[in-house]
Length: 453
Image 1 (spheres, rainbow, N blue to C red):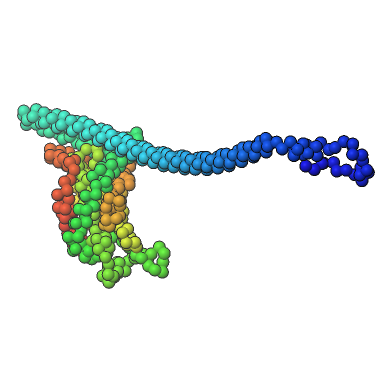
Image 2 (image 1 turned 180 degrees about the vertical axis):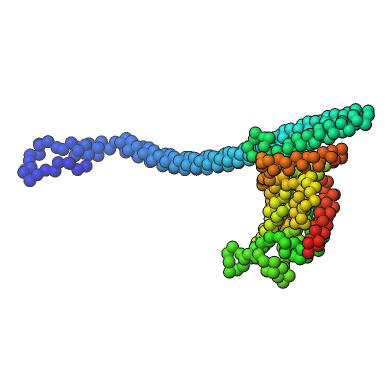
């Protein structure tokens, strides 16, 4: 044991009886005593210290293991929570997408149902008007027959009654003819636009425009009639307006062919595909057969009343625009102006050869018809394009005295044939009869073209 306070130089001469450092005394006493208890205690304390350090090391190791295990568990839990959140987000997105699809489908179905309901309402209203018109005509015919039976009692009464019946029939026909003209011009309707145009376009949509079978039937028809190409180029091309758009590498919008020579040369020399071949085969008045059949019939929903008024239509002008620039999009568009006519009743013998055709008929209105036909199976999502549209009906008569007299003459002529049966052609044209109607129409066009060549 060493003293923490070593003696200084002045203490060297200190007396032996001076105070001894306590540490020195303790060392002397320890040695002197020779007691082993302290060594045992120290050894025991050292052993306890080592054991405590060992336990502390073990505890520290265990604590590190627990800490690492806790981190792994927390990381694993975090990963699982992230996966659950991601799966939940995916499920929620899929659910939202499916709900959106179902909502859009429900809206589309609802719109379709509402449209069909409105169509049936309009159809029912037209049927009611037709029934009322037939009832009125039947009542008129019954009254006429009664008057005619009464007039047969004696010759004098017969003459007087016949004159009266003719006068009444003429007045009745005059009223019917005015109603027919008003229906064409749309003057009897309070609705915006011409309701007859809307009704006919609805009928076109139901029977033709929205029916993919019609387009396929037209494709089959024109594929089986190769002679129509020659008929178009030789008969129709010189007397009607044609415009053909073809692809041209030097012009972005293509090249336009307008003269008969250019168009005929293109189709004679060019190696055209089937799509272009079908376009030139149908680019004539044969494409008018189906819409004209739809426009013919009795009732307020038709234009041509061939039974009651012997009305006819004359194609006063036809313009054909053929677009051949892009494969899969080639199509024919026809702008046709149809003159709606009835017998004029003008029996004047002073008419010349130039005016005889016009004086024999009275033009009531002009209907503008647009036809689009694309033979490509990809022209629309459902197949070939076929679209008939009645754009307008323009009255040809006014309220002038001359036009009023012309209507009176026509009514008088029609009244003489009042007992002729009324043909009813409101029923839809069956698919099996379309080709025959189109062929008969084409036959008439060919005959007319040959007579004017």
